[in-house]
Image 1 (cartoon, one colour):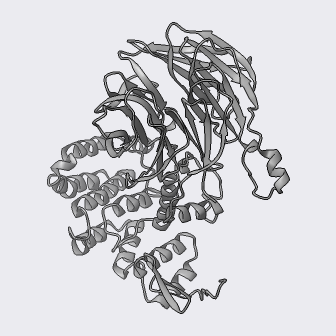
Image 2: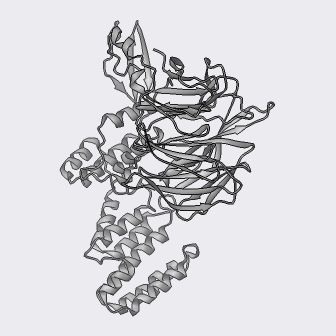
Image 3: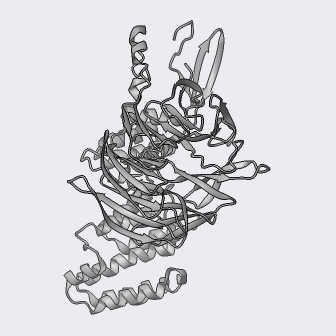
Length: 569
């Protein structure tokens, strides 16, 4: 390394040595148990049909991934040596290394029983049921033993083998049933004896999924259909791992520019899904859409005169036509459309600079959400709020395809996980999660104060709630875990007593919120400590929005300006 610092690549016992300026700094990293790790590798090699390599690794390391007894135990199951298998269970399995040896033996005997029926050995099957299975099930009342016994007894009446297989969803001794049996009983046996199949692969997939969730990525590995499998060695996965181990959390506290096109209070700002556009609106009834690339140095390689020319703070589009102040803006997932709603009850759908649809409702629209690229829903602000679902067809005109009334007044709303549920904040201090298909409440959460706004993180698990608090209260923002259905964090410092203020997540480490005292508060999401306070606005900061593509924070204020913040150089 430069400046006399060298890295020799030596790592011993999980320790990396860095030398510089005559000092040796040891960075200890977590390590896994060597024996367990080698056993997992050996098993994976066998799964990949690299048995010769697996044998060489066993010989070189002196570690067997299975004892001779367990190898024979698995072999006996695959060969149908049921009496020998049962004796092995009695000999080797105890409550210390097996969750329940009796249940394991039941699964073995059930396979034996089914194979006897398949071979038309009805008398032998009946004896197995009476003399071997029944005594075990009678000792497993919590396992619903009597129900299992009744089900197995009814199989004696089936004379057709194909019907037997269909009824039991079992493919016979010559199918995969013995391998399925082995996988089933492995769930009960300690990995110290038998490692479940594909365990290393499962660990890797779980690690990648956890990294994606931690970095709030929306794509699900369960939907990955590539025949080659989930790639492990990609820059994205490596960067996710590095970012999850990052100690220093960067804070967007450097003011890049101030947008001054609005002539009155700015109530809301929203970056587009792809991070390329910013939409702002408020009391003056105008919507301004800015191109982000016009006022940031994207590639950091511009010459000075090019930088000067790039500082174009004028909007790309100016959208007009609303009859009232605009309080709701939503980009469609593909950023093709921008949806806007105002307190004068009109709704508009924009495609670039063109308004492709406008309509008036019977009540002000308090929130709207895009379900997918063609469908969205709107929610009215009235005693019994109405949810209306719209769909944009090829002609470009939204059509109402569904609507229903709620038994409560809604303050704000967000879509839940996978867009299958709707999260609403109600006038009676509750957060309700509603199934969009059944229209029924899944669960609700009770807040301590009136709710003014909601924000959901990218993976849909965490909900940020802004609360209207009195002057003597200190906590204005709550973080809920929707999966666990509990309040996990409280953030204090900002002032919010009577205005609607919208907060946002900054990556997976920070929370940002405006405030009535003209400041922007940024907290550490994990510790709830105040990381920074941003000054610059001269009025209430109503809304903040995070751009994860370019690491930008936008803030909208009553002082008629929108400010853009980024990391300090």
